[in-house]
Image (cartoon, rainbow, N blue to C red; front, side, top):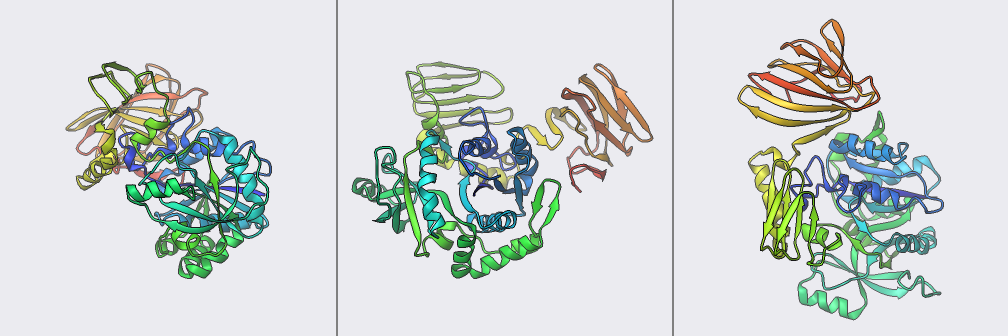
Length: 478
């Protein structure tokens, strides 16, 4: 049995303003119609003996992850919540402990949730080649066959060949002992690596038995292994989620699988993978995997362009017009616009850092904010008032709550609303409204079969999202 372990803890700051800290790139449909998380899970669906995924994610993303998995029929997946990020080695350790709890020492296939792979069949062939080696206690990493001298990736040097048979179909799917891991090189060194034919890019994808990984982690990082076990043993179930113990996991040292285990073990093996892989780590990388027109441009949304070449132009909410641009990225959302040369897109993280220093919400959230019951979007705001569009999924319920500093007017524009207002329970249809006075306990529900949409007008001295006192909540929020 192979258990996929999907690592979904990244923030994707280099893809701002589409990717935000509370809505990162793995939860966005950047490359395909499905989100990157859904695509990662979906490409394993045709593999024999593939078990239910174990997903490790940030606590802040839990409801979006669960909803996306349910949307593709994977509602039974184990979702482990990290109270804070500790890099990939601890994340895989707690996933291995969960996999051992569910079965008899399964093989883990560790995949980041935010990678793009064009050739799924090539990936599955590589997994098939890796399986017997993983069963023989080797720790496998998949090395991407380089397409050029890339300075943004680490490299893996292949050593002794471990497979005896090679054919035309699996010519790249050959297992080698790992001779050496190399840090991100300068350009000249990267050219030497690629020219030698002995090196692959370090992809961050792995395969090994659960117990074997934990054995090596305990050997080379015993303190990390101990805290991971402690946090898992003290974990608690919360709805669809496994909540790691915050105190124990916070005390756990952070490190990558490469540094903690793969660079130290004597049993590391690498399988070269030629599958159209990209980590989609920047806007230029996304431009490379996106479809282009005859001038090398990729357009999304309402875009008008004149004399534009080799550009990525993404419009979310309004017309974007571009004239005379070459090798640029333009990304428009409802609350931010990014313009950058493709050679400088790695510096987008500096913009995100500045937003965080300034405590600006654009680093964390989009104007449309997703919640377990649906979403809300700020339409307009000024001193003492705010207007929102609220969408409630069929059958969903907001918490029973009250506010100390604001009153609310609700107008139904689509669907049917059930409103608790103090001691009263009202049913409202389209074009009907109600008023929630300051300090009154209230709740909004959608009893219907179509999404409920309401316009909410808030008025008061303070309109922040932290002015919510919850009395009951279906989603375990305090």
